[in-house]
Image 1 (tube, rainbow, N blue to C red):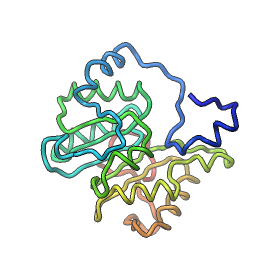
Image 2: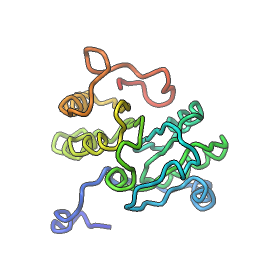
Image 3: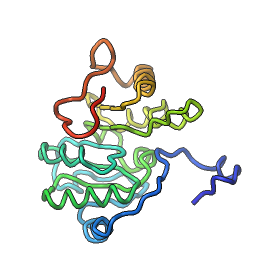
Length: 217
């Protein structure tokens, strides 16, 4: 792990979509990571995935980046068996909890990648391979000097634009007003996306997303 005290290491460090937080997986989550990962997990590789072979069918594909404990992703995958769903998350406790939920629900349309989303978008997901992408409540980095660490920045949006198929949808949610404004500005500046929300540029939480915080999306 790179030391935060070494400026030279920090300069060499590539851009990441996350910061690892302290947290320990429960015994059940650790068992899920050991026993269920072969069934639901996708190891990171810099080669593009063959999603049709992975899921055994041709179907619309949904991607959630930073799914946390996985409640929204589980709900979506359960409600949409016609779609193949991929979750990307770096925090092992959340991944373990999602695996437990997927097994309890006997889901066949869900797979998980435990890796940095930037590298997944850069290398592992082929261009135009995703029809719907969700990013709900990314770290708001509320202090102004930390805003540069926010996930929704022009370079990351370019990666999303490459990965989402023409006519596809990107859904964002945050409960920080300043971050919502930044999201609107960054997405609005991208020629690849058109805001289909109201004139205000945002909407109240969709009825489809019943779990999670009450916010504007």
